[in-house]
Length: 209
Image (cartoon, rainbow, N blue to C red; front, side, top):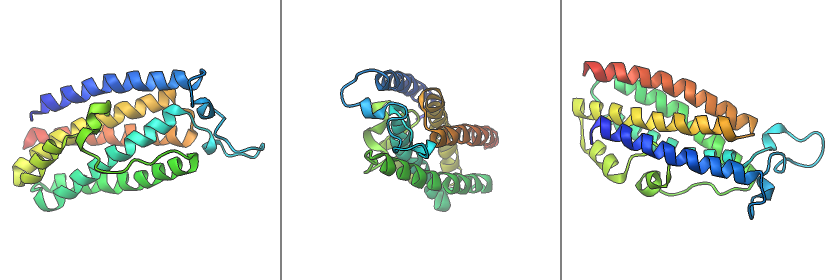
């Protein structure tokens, strides 16, 4: 799969995600069945001393539920680099991605548990990208990456991870626009800043390979 094909699929998925999140955000403020308890402030514990982190809406829940498998796949891709990458910068970057995203997975899992919402389970690849999650690689993509090694792996890894990061940034931007949870919005901004920097680095590496 070419870099252009991956990027185009990520962009199309981003449009679907934007629509889904916009509808979710609108529904949280209306009388959508079963969503009344997701309105801003409704998730907070009783009493004036309730923590702001207990306040959440549909957009916050969707952000965590989608970003967890998204991050899990990035970690899987990064782990492949341990034994398959040739370029030292690619190996270093993969380690950096894994070190940043694994703790975020744990944090978001904790949010969903505290909010009483389902935590995603199962393979992070497969059909997830068909449900509007931008940048996700299919099982076939992951299989192709796992079968590569050396410089060919490096090129595939960088092309796929650039698209993957672009998808994460799209999701994070939607969280900032539609979410109400302070911690989730802060993580979203952190993801945008960190992953845009990594995209810039990966493009430079890819250009010299």
